[in-house]
Image (cartoon, rainbow, N blue to C red; front, side, top):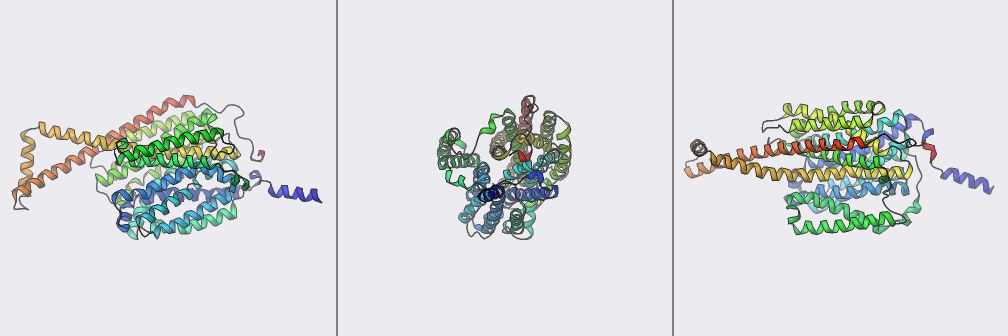
Length: 535
């Protein structure tokens, strides 16, 4: 009897076999988790599109409001690699359900925030708990699917990853313009509850190992949190505060560097590391992470730059900006179908090379932007960008996660997704710096050109002052108005040329990434993952 009871207990504790799961249930599980990922990703851009309204509603200062996004991103960066450990300790079901439930609760708290301090605190918690949903979906997709079904996973999740930032400004603009900015948080309540309930009901693919909670290497966890949060702080605040010319940024950078050193030491020598770096032993995984860093740089930077251009140069409101950048989604939908089909038939080196070339081409087309560009002129460059970015994403995901199973697959997924977010943070900080520097350079050149033109520039200002004299009796005031008008025109044109320079530099960066493509060979024999019941 004792042996029968022990055998029954072993069967109860044994992990489910995904291979025996009906295909319809697999798709349903994946759909629920992918929607949770979409909810977490789109929230970033929805909020970004409404920061001005949040600032006014909470009576916050310009420097304070940026922390609504910075706090979220800092906390999310910490959770993404930590989620592999939690998935093993809690099980995928309870990690995802808890993440979705807490994300929903903190969305309510953000919508009820009474001042900027409470908003920043709730956003930090929201970013931390929501960050677990993103890498978990990738790991689950590569666990429960195989063969042709698995080929669709990178394409679908890649589309979710880039479609969410694209739709965010549109959805945020519509909600803020038609209802109220607080509803950009309250809109998460119904889908959040649904995702939580469905995850508890449907997801059953592994078992929890709660003993791991007693083995947490706290020094490793704290070192990772300080290193990633410090890096995100430096990248977010650097462009606004002259980078290392600011003593506070220098101090945070040194703290982050020391914490990163401790993180590496614990990763190699800890008996129970929070994050396992073993996936980096595979060269293909290393190259995939570098590609994902570059892709994240391109996706997040281009998604950031165009709304800034439309807002600062064209004076578009959030709704107009959203409807202008929405066209990228059409290219992404078509690109998803092409990429999924090509992943089974074409060498991934060819597909990622075509994707990089196409993405570089779309950036090069955008580098000819003028101060009059709007929806019509941006239609083709954006469509091309959405089309070719999917080839990059699908190839890099396959390259990164193929061949991993179990806990190592979770670690690989967390590290891989971390690279994309780091690429985005580095990209936004970099293009901000390029934009500021190039704007000053171009404005200086315009000023030199006007000075070299001699009498023609002075005659133009005098003629404009005579026109302003019709609306003001003070000739000195009319002259000041004319000079201010010329200054605005010069500033607008200088900023436009600076955008051209930034997009051109990004295009060259994607072309430079082609150097890595020949080294991304096909997986060696035996690298294909074993069937799901092997673990």
